Image (cartoon, rainbow, N blue to C red):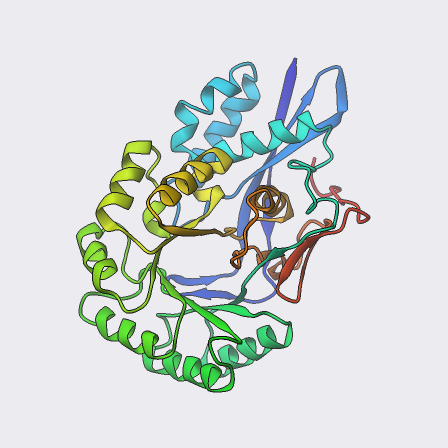
Length: 350
């Protein structure tokens, strides 16, 4: 018989993670641990990592579901397609821990050339919000680290200062040398978004994520139809948990790209559905982590490796924490690699 427990953990960033919605100074995640009663030494671990301000779920929702799951373990597979659909982070945690238990607690969830250390995943560098001088320094650090795709958070310090930073980068590095992405987290309005898009187009920006707040579907559809810079939907995907809702969004808004965060949309199953629907409509996509610890990032990265991606993915966030779980994952010069010779240190879990 399956048995389960859960643990809450607070992750501490090495610096304030600035976005247009405010700075992140701590991150709470929950680990769901499962084992067979007769073999308690073999455990599967999954991470629930909702994102306050982005997720449609709340910490209380997560805790209630985790308590229910630990009290009764015989109906998990059924719940993956029923009530857990509306608690995406917990659904993903269940997917992860069941898969991990299935592979003997090895964390090798999707065996591939990636987990053997033979292949890597291209990833983008990420420049968090800060004052102008700090952001300039962080851009330089990303370049020095070898990233050829860099994403900059915009919409908090003033668009003129942000454009000035982007112009300085583009002056030194042309679009063939460096791909620039920006993420607005819904910071702009109809009053200024068209002007912003025009300036970004002049700088050969690859794409802008979520230029206006989520839920403004008619506005976003108009923007996607006329934008000079490709638009990637991000927050607009969150909370759309049925196939019909996903199809309606893609068919009516017609974005150039979508950004898929498995922790926020419902795990591998939901991520694959988004990919299939987008691909059928000629819509591009990439996968992004949502500031998970190494447990969640590993689950996302190994899945992503099975998709044979060539575009940079947003999987480089594991380095931001001072107390992350030591793992075989390593972000190195624009690529995420898995080092099978490195051991997991799970001493802080369970």
